[in-house]
Length: 367
Ligand SMILES: Cc1cc2nc3c(=O)[nH]c(=O)nc-3n(C[C@H](O)[C@H](O)[C@H](O)COP(=O)(O)O)c2cc1C
Image 1: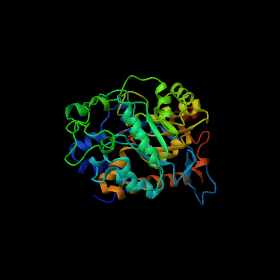
Image 2: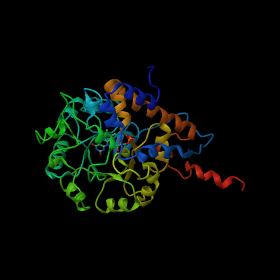
Image 3: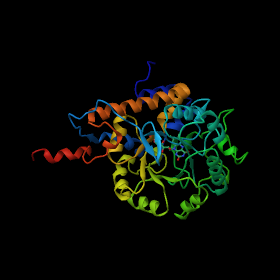
Image 4: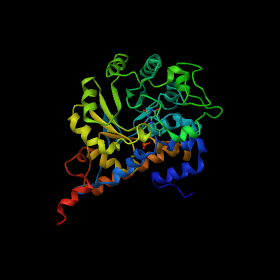
């Protein structure tokens, strides 16, 4: 295969080279996967209105997340079981993120522990993702480890209260190959994973559906770190999140892996941004595949975007170097989109009417 030039190329490589089980695990979504598809289609329904004759001779893609500087507003979403993509798993993806000075979010269900990741990538902004699990003690211990290891925020995933309906997993259970284990969980709870079927975990690891907004305060009480809520898609939940002390809101539909039929994250973003009214930072993921997508999300009010599957494709292609290439391509495409869109800095992207739904143009067509 020729050298990949875009994220789609990495996806094709991953599909051709990963084991069937790994490809299924990474690519699938819930039920008919309409939300997976909409995450892409919704970006295509948006149009960028360029501004001509701006000084774009130099462009600055740096920004800050919760006050910490990053080289660009593109980060790594938490995804589980990265050793299914490459033997170095999360160590490789974290190294790539640190090399490029972008934000790295480690999943609870990582095949490398917090200690492994810190040893592999001692520098770079790192956040830990946690779930509301049946055994709250697991979350508590992971947060303590991350805080002690210098992670800078906790990403609390609020859109996963049960086992999702996934036809692919029902047909072929996801097992861990020999030598792969969920070391992040082993570090706090040895012997708890059934390696032949990771979707049939022992009781303490199951997602709990016994939830209320008080769980956010419970997580906040465990840590001095800011707590970001991931998986918010409505104005109502965004307001509740702020009322319960969320430091930031992450608009996401989990890459279409949880509730099929929910909106594309980019569709839901403006509603959340309007409800938040600048009180906290808003991030988004789900379906970001090009620099133009990043530009669209920023124009609609996201402080940063994150990518999930593309990082797994990069890992499959060439470990840490593959992930670096994926993130570099996105950054370069963002930079180029800024030049042609008329923006010389990230701050200039947010703006009224820079990005519109394609239906905007209907009003000008004579009836
Ligand atoms: C294989 C896979 C595993 C994931 N594991 C987690 C996880 O452990 N925790 C979490 O909050 N989100 C998880 N996600 C969701 C991602 O964080 C992210 O929201 C999603 O992948 C973004 O969509 P994209 O893949 O289209 O970029 C996972 C996604 C994938 C594809």
